[in-house]
Image 1 (cartoon, rainbow, N blue to C red):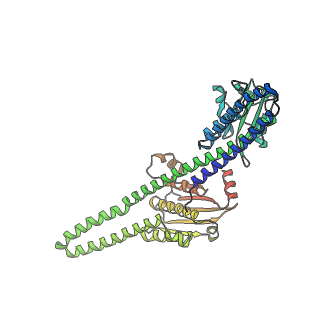
Image 2 (image 1 turned 120 degrees about the vertical axis):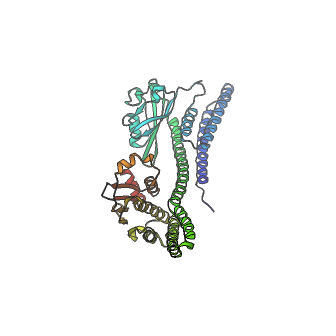
Image 3 (image 1 turned 60 degrees about the vertical axis):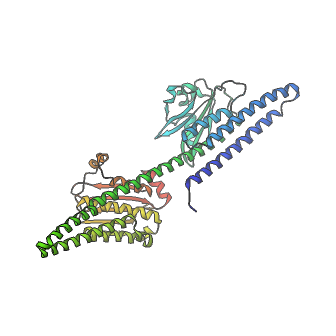
Amino acid sequence: MSFDPFSILGIGIVGVFSLLLGVLGGYFWARRGTKNTKSTGISSTARQGAHSLSMDERWRQIYRLTTALSNTLNYERVLDTALDLGATALANPKETASPLVSAVFLFDVDELVVQTARRFTTADMRTTLPGLQGVLGKAINEGDATFTQDVARDPELGRIVAMRNCKSAYCIPLRSGLDVYGVLVFAHPKKDFFTRENRETLDIIAVQAMNALQNARLYQELEQEKERMAETQEETRKKLARDLHDGPTQSIAAIAMRVNFARRLIERNPKGAAEELYKIEDLARKTTKEIRHMLFTLRPLVLESKGLKAALEAMAEKMNETFDQNVLIDVDEAVIAQLDLGKQGVIFNIADEAVNNARKHAQAAHIWVRLKPARHGLALLEIRDDGVGFDVKRVEASYDRRGSLGMVNLRERAELINGVLQINSKPGAGTQIQVWIPLTEEAAELMWHRT
């Protein structure tokens, strides 16, 4: 049975919002029941009927909003719907228009930027806040929701024009684990608006909004990964076409021309024709080796049967046989033991790409491929040559105008294994390519925090 990540994602989202629907449903019906028990008598019954209709309408709105959340994987719509759901849940049936002010702020580098808001002015939408002081700073630093009953004196919320008429505000951090991605902010003109019940309601909405936001982002990442895989496949096809054109295709064309020449030479100079046939035979063998090398790099079966070290050694041997290029392999078996087959395949592709680049452009006598352990749970893949070298900054500055995508391929493949690529070179001093590869999740987290 095949594994479909999109089906799993869909199941997860349905489950999350089914839970939200049940929790909010029970919560609001419980509140409705509590209020209804306080009404007695004929006049109270009439008022209760009117109130029930209003509550029913509000419940239908909540249902529509939660359904909208469950049916979208667009994170911007998730944020908009979260604000609408909060406003609907806290709406007063007696008010024709709610004075509730709300906004979602998300971090952009080290500042909070308005992603979506309700009742914000145009100038407010451009506001950026540091998130270091007041209720924002407290919520972000402590990771817990907090509120104030003196918005005017808040050092950050007080800057927002739409909140100048508000007296109370409730701020909920949007967090996952220890990371805070932003905040949900609700403000109201009444000082005592954010009762314990209202705060609990917004807490429920914020938790489920964060879950929906993570699912939406996960879906976008999966979509981007699909696009990247399609681009990689297209680039592989283009690379294969270039390699065929530059190598075997031209060789076969040369063979055809030489065969034609040898055929005409047979009658006039049989000895010369025989020598020409020997040259044709040698060229045909060389072309066969090039095609076999290309097939090997496309799918190295030895990698699946014997592992990464054997595949790299086979690649080095074929480089020597086909192109007379010396490639020296030094691999630590202990590192390979900590890598699954998928990562070994990516490392092989990185090494093969780097070695081919060096063979084509570096004019190197030797190319070294090393895989060894490093500190802090990392492994180091290093491809070094003693060739002519190049100016890395100059090449990267003009890379968008170049037909080759070798360096781009190296960086993208390094990212597939959560690795960090570093290229060191200068004219006349050879080239050194290093890929730092995390062997554990802890090492990956540590490395990316440092970078």
